[in-house]
Amino acid sequence: MQLFREVRNQYTQAVRNAKASFFKQKFASCNSNSKKFWDIVKSMENKNTSSQLPTALRIGNSVTTDKPTIIENFNKHFSTAGHAFHLTTPTAFNSTAPSTATRPSLPHFSFSQIHSADVLKELQNLDPYKSAGLDNLDPFFLKLSAEIIATPITSLFNLSFVSSEIPIDWKAAAVIPLFKGGDTFDPNCYRPISILPCLSKVFESQVNKQITDHFESHRTHSAMQSGFRAGHGCTSATLKVLNDIVTAIDKKQYCAAVFIDLAKAFDSVNHHILIGRLSSLGFSNDCVAWFTNYFSDRVQCLKSEGLLSGPLAVSMGVPQGSILGPTLFSVYIKDVALAAGESLIHLYADDTILYTSGPSLDTVLTTLQTSFNAIQLSFRGLQLLLNTSKTKCMLFNRSLPAPSLHNRRQTHWLQVIYKTLLGKVPPYLRSLVTIAAPTCSTHSIRYISLVTPKANSSFGRLSFQFSAANDWNELQKSLKLETLISLTSFKHQLSEQLPDHCSCT
Image (cartoon, rainbow, N blue to C red; front, side):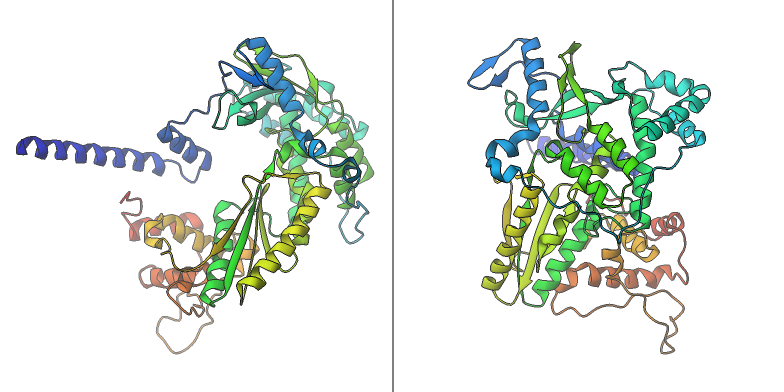
């Protein structure tokens, strides 16, 4: 029996080591490709994210197993998902809308002519394995004929700008139901993903680039919006919020936050309000007319398992799966941050955290409640409905031990610090680090070092502003960089300094 236990333990350890080695290699092959990374994670979880139809669907108080009926009811459910606000809010309030007066200080925006070289590049980069839209134009053949069709397609795109009209076929979406988790019979447990015509996505990509370039160059984006923006992400947003909370607690202040969740946010966008937002941001009359046409006469059909529902009109929302959708949603909720008042706010797409700190718990809760009331009014003005079951309040203290930085992916953490030095992170993170001025007091003045801010406790040393400076200066003892090098070169040097950085232990 003793021999059996020993062999069993050796076998178990060998399997664990093999799994660790396998996934270490898989993750190392991601090369900062977040989609590939999450595909691996999902494969490990074995979660059912199938787009197949359920065996039955609950409709009101009845349950149906008829596939065509399920298809039609899914489509009806998705096409009206954004109407929840109107079903739960008095009509008198629904009629109100935020002011859309033009802001004279904002720069003017109008569409520029699209060049055939850019369209050719988009066509050549198409994924030939993606599904075709309802127009049945397969991306495989569009990619194959890219050099031939790029010029006439470009002319069609530019004609759309001139006429402020979009081909009607490009406004029809095939929707698939993606299961989110929960009750498989409940249509609310499914997310609609739109499969749009391939050419419409190529066109939207060009339009989106013009808009985002304009916003970034003129800093039109909300400073505290980290969703769908180059150089921003979950990491930068999390580090900023955690830094503020840890710093406040280190100063022996109370800190509280409200995590705000919206119900069907993307599906609830009011087109009239959004058009007004675009106008107030300096979009030209031609652009406004183009977007008005973009949202008019849109339809969707539900497609699954070879079945196709009848078309239904879509009068609200931005298509989930479109290129323009995320950018337009960011425009829609841009001014919400202005209602935060004395509290701090950060947004990642439609996820919002409102937080504040102060010398007493009563002060903190009063300030947070006042800000939360104002934020709710702002969302109501946009006809967005809070998901009360997922909106949570949290108090922070230092009684629980914080996770050690050594338990994180050390290489990723050090790369975040270096990206901060290169200015490849949002301004709200760049402002938290300061390069030390040269002095004549040491022999290491030629090496790049950071100013380490004061921290009152070991907990305070977990803040980004302290730990980034401290860990960088510690790394420089071996790295000894005199000038900033490229991120690629830094990663190479880091891999030599930390050969075991991907350890699963």
